[in-house]
Structure formats: structure tokens, C-alpha cells
Image (cartoon, rainbow, N blue to C red; front, side, top):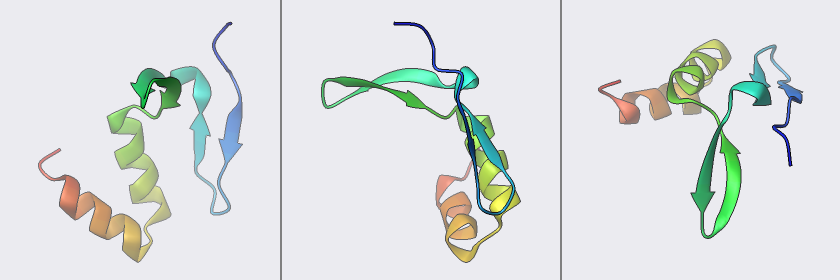
Length: 61
């Protein structure tokens, strides 16, 4: 099976490009995971209260 090149568009503008995802095994299933730097950028762009809290909890990054 090839890499998924789908793009998920967020309601508020930011996107998640699956072409840049990193495969990780979670509970025995391989899933695409957003690279850390992309996750930080995505959460900064959304700038919701929950994203600000997530970023504070993820420090130092």
C-alpha cells in the first residue's frame, strides 16, 4: 500500500497534508501521525484556547 497523499482541510484554514505524515504503530495498528513541527504550526494557526493549552503542555519544543 502506498502513502496517502490526501489533504485534510480545517474549518479555520490550516491543513494536514498526509504526504508529510510519519507512520507510527499505535496499539498494533500503523497510522499516519502529523510530524511534531507541523503539529505545533497547526495548533498555532488554529489559536484556540485548547490549542494554546496544548502548546503550553508540550513545552519545551
